[in-house]
Length: 417
Image 1 (cartoon, rainbow, N blue to C red):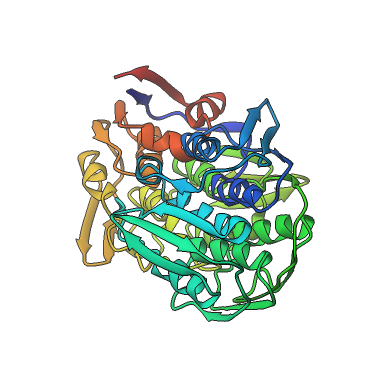
Image 2: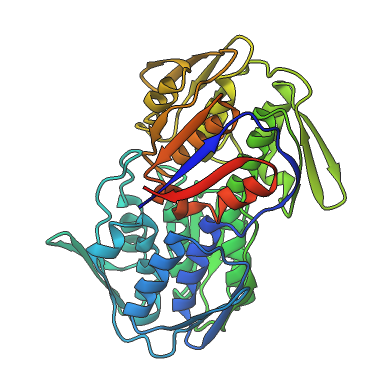
């Protein structure tokens, strides 16, 4: 197991390229199960979660090869239909094979994901939607056994705009008989990316990017040759890194429209953000001002940026309030930030942060993916040395983050713990 050691105080400067989006790549890879043949993906990041989904599809019979900028999957020989607990427990997104397997093969056996470090994320909306399309689903010793001779289009209203549920049902509906209408669907850019990929396979989808999706099922789909969108959460994390260190960083490859809510809050806090050709320049000329945020489904402030923004607010002038409306247990990083000198008080789903003039390095422990990134950010700005342990969380969603930060001037290394 590795840890990251940071000697804080360096201002970041230079250019950095954003990697492909994990949260877009995972459903895209699962979508390859919808059609036999060789599927090609570009800009797939090298991450633990990508390794997990690769191993899962290989266990189903898919043939996979990976190169520098090419991820190929041949799903012709897929002949197994079970996503075992040992894989699903490592990554909840493994449940995204449920819809494609059921749509193409008429059956699937998928482990229930179980609990989650940042809160319960039940898949009842996935099940409810598939049952509305004619699937028979039963629970058997922790597994979902699903069968359907042929899925049929249906009007489905989601009680919550679930991202995973929208993705699973959209993929299943692409091969269903008739028209499916998903109401109160998630609107995230990753949903739009998946819809565009499915349309390139021959799917008929309208309304991507809105809360109503209309999917007209087709008898079969073709193979994919698709480039994964850039990771908006990595881009946002790098923007906060520049702001926390008083740096001057040009971020290449990001799509600013995907981060309007974050960019607005960074500007309110005193960060200068300008657009130059294909880069976004982030500078912090003065001390950060305190601003409030509340997390909401897209296009609101992303819950996946809450911990990183809290890191920034620990050094702000004044007091800020952060309200977490998406996950009920996503303040676990607070105790670790307090070890670094942050002044944070928790009251239910609200955190009150009183900015301090400096953070002091200390050993800290990551509790989940975005918490690990927030602790790295704190370490960049803290005096002396910070050690971030259990960084396997970081490796789930950030491709060589410490290398990118080091090229920007950070004093950061990865060492065996």
